[in-house]
Structures are given as C-alpha cells and as structure tokens.
Image (cartoon, rainbow, N blue to C red):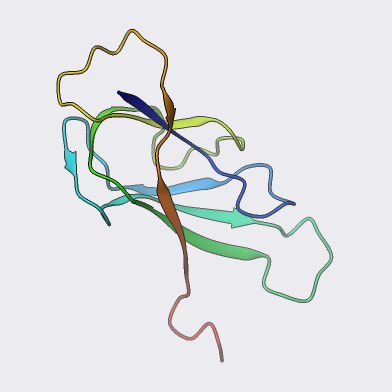
Length: 116
C-alpha cells in the first residue's frame, strides 16, 4: 500500500516550512520512531508574545519503506506539499495513488538555552 507524507499544518498560521534536514533515504526501511525530516516554521510575520521560529521533527509511527523523497534540504514547501512517498511493501508499484497519509508524530524540538 502506498502512503504519503505531506507537510502537515502544525500551526494554524503557518503557510510553509523550511526543510532543515532529511533523515529518510530512498530504499530505507523505517521502524516505528524513525526520524523522517527536521523542519522550521517561522511565524515572524505575526504579532505575538512567543518566539516566532519553532523547530520540529517528523517521526514515523509505523513500519514502512521510503520510496521517494520529493524535497531537498533548504527548500520551503507549502502546507500540503508532498514530502515523502512510502509503501508498506518494499517493492510496491509506484504508479498507483496513495491509499492514505502516513502516520507520523510531530515533535517540537527545543534548543538548549531556549528557556533562558
């Protein structure tokens, strides 16, 4: 079964995210908890009382195979843009439509010294 990882709407005010690093490599078998992508969301265009830049890590919540990585480090895709195509079988044909979104965890990454 094909699965898609699209850029999730993490914050209702975000429109894009900067891809900081990509841990998922094409052909890689993912275990539950595998790191997929690190990204940064910048809400500096809004007036608010918290830091406007937040870092996140997307982690797999299911076993899957990385079939195609559609973004590169430094790119800034829009919410909903495809990041990674996964499959439940290593040799699944890639010509079909994804059956569903991949199950992921979105973890906020707090840098050392951020609470000072």
